[in-house]
Length: 210
Length: 429
Image 1: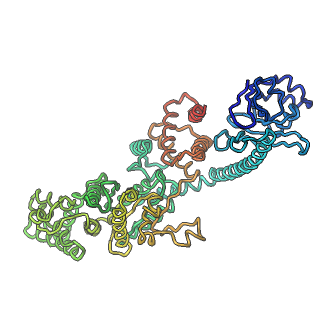
Image 2: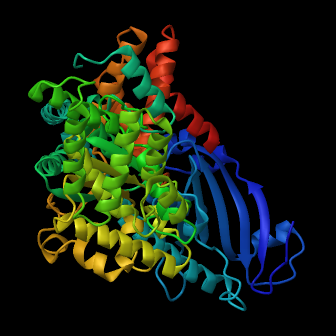
Image 3: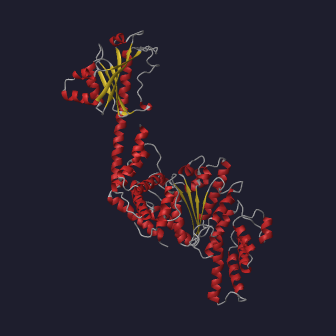
């Protein structure tokens, strides 16, 4: 199954579900294996970006070196860094991981060490699934005539900058939530409510006094 | 819950709020979190009682409680023996306009005059009759003359003329006094037709001077360009008729902001400026004016009140308020900015409404501390998610909730409280 729609290093649709039992058997840490077995619903190898054109069958495609895109559905949120690290250890090839859970998504990337560069890994926190914050895996203008490795580097830098933005946003949300909770706990304190009641009674008395 | 709330008051308040409109009565029982504003406005009322004038702009978002505050004041001053009147400005009712919109505002104000004895508008005739009746009583009480005595009418007439002539020095006061005398003449001679003509004139319903001259012998009619002079004359007159003053409520000044032509807007703002100057310079006595306006209609520099330089320079916050003393409020400023009720104030309001609901339906509302907090957090959460939820919306939702809980007492209240959460998640799915 392949799809040669773009005039860039080819993005082929793989659409192949992983046999999870076999995959997770390789996880050495028993606790980690248990977490993965319990919380991961499915792992789907969705796309494979390769530099070579004209691939006609899936067997040839999966043998070709490139950048794989996996979509992982989760029952509950697990730290994306942990997920990426463990999947990197299991699959050991360049890959982008898209984690989906409760209407939110997170993205991770692993680029193993090549001749000149050290291995790289990065993952964003979960964030609401919306078009504005969607990370574009493919940028057809930028990626024209680029190799799969170059595309991997670009996606890595996008994910890393998104990670920072999402971290800041989450920290800010937490801060707002904390200050809002503080404010509300003051607002609904018996002391404050009594003061407001007394003020209201005073106003009522004034409005009723002729 | 304070005593004094009857089932009728509770029904009026809850039904009005449920429909998103401000009730006419019972507002004092649910006024929460407006202590400073009410204090400032009551201070104005004292000044008006003592012969001064006051004008205030109540600025706030839609649904923030501007009309509520105005009506609360209206009811209060009515009980303090004021004549009150109100008008909702609209496309057809402005301060000035080329199709008689200013006069239409005046007519509405006269039509909506109300007093303690006649709280539901249409009090003009009653005011006039009370005035004449009071003078007749004085003649009976202090001069020992009884109706029918040959000197009785003369003495009453003398008193009437004394009052009307004291108004002659005011702008248009001569004609105004003359019409009052005509009304009295009609009263004395049983000429109902003459009384009606005088009332018609006072209501601004004469279209031509000729007609007014023929019917009442006056050379003037109330029109777009002079109607405000007659409001001032009424303020003066009602005090002479035994009232404490005239209190005018103008709602929806935002209508002026919506006038499409710049010239039209400026004419109206100019009129507002002359009213403002008049009242604050002491030219208007015993007159209070309260105007509600949205923040945008006030502060928009291109179309709002602030687009008119002379008004802006008079009513804009000074550097102290807009700068270093930010967060502090000057309640003596002509503009009272209504902030949204804070969560604690909303909580107390919910308590009060629950109490009223209990009085109306004869039960004890089951809502507790945590339920109020839960409800409010849900409402504020909607705001945080981008849905604009005003106090008005929250109250509507809350009264619906109270109704559901009262009507379905066999259903656990938690289930009803969380019903809206279910709707949200269904919508999300």
